[in-house]
Length: 473
Image 1 (cartoon, rainbow, N blue to C red):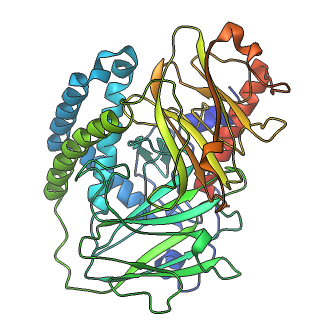
Image 2 (image 1 turned 90 degrees about the vertical axis):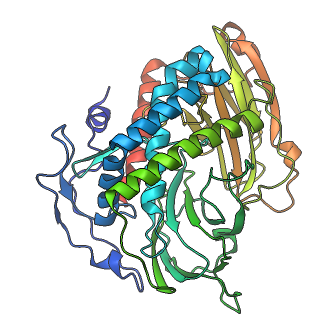
Image 3 (image 1 turned 120 degrees about the vertical axis):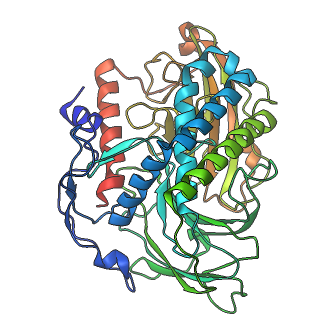
């Protein structure tokens, strides 16, 4: 393991480098966060304690949010709810499998952290774009647990904010010089996982993507969010009485060259705000939500994933209801010494991502291992298609989707910012389950091979590139 990987594995995901916060027109709080330190706070595990805001994710509010979430997940009420969700998982058919049992406890902890993130965010009277659904990380003295669930996408920087249908909000943002492949906003009419089981997880009320946004030459933009019609406003999201959650997703194709956008939200009108919630109220709400979404995502998986045949990747037939582009999902099941060989066509999409999760929908390790690959990380075939090898054992090819030791789990494939005239039936070219011993016979000519040393270099670069999300350069 290289020096860089050893440092990052120990938790130094953000170096103590002072970075000046770029100015945003009308930036308000983002432009006024002071530099300082968090000495005396956090763990003694070697986490960096410097506080030098500058990245799109690095603010004192984010750090306070993460500390509150950590406190909630340790509360006795939430610990009891974790036990209940673990029992649900063990009673599910996937809980009887080796891969399900191996990953069960970690998956429960992950969805519990996500539930706490959702509850702490759920305050439309004091809205903030909180970075959620993340890999575990350690910065500024704070150790943050994994919070993936629901087939979270490693290429997305997810930020959630609460809204309602009675207030007015203004979002001010700026694209970084290293622009993401796509920035999207999706307005939901419920907290995902709390209503009827649907493909999108909750009713989608509105969506806005950079493909359809007006963005100034310097990368800045303003979005209005309220119950009124757009009436000439170029970037507008119209709410309804049931509006509850707005999710922003920066989809990063090239982790080294693309970064998340700067975002802030202000509530500009609406009814009088109630008093803040107490820690006991937050814990009660988190425990209730955890039990609800724990059951919901089991039902979702058994409705939309495990009703399909294993190792069968079906091409999408229509765009997603949220307006991203195309997507398909399912599950894989590998025997000893087997691999799933998949060839996809990017079909001109600005973003194509292929990822693996455990049987519970939590992304496989994607910072230090290749549990996901997008088209910037993968090596294409001569005809522009991309061939991936899904396996537990290193196949010696560049495009390895590493199951991290499990023999069964889920997959998701997403094509975003797709040309309007694309035929989705072209997206999936071939899928083959083969013995690793026969792999050479099915790989395209010119497939990029790797030695163990080259694999280590590939993963070193992956860790380094992921770190850019924290540095915000």
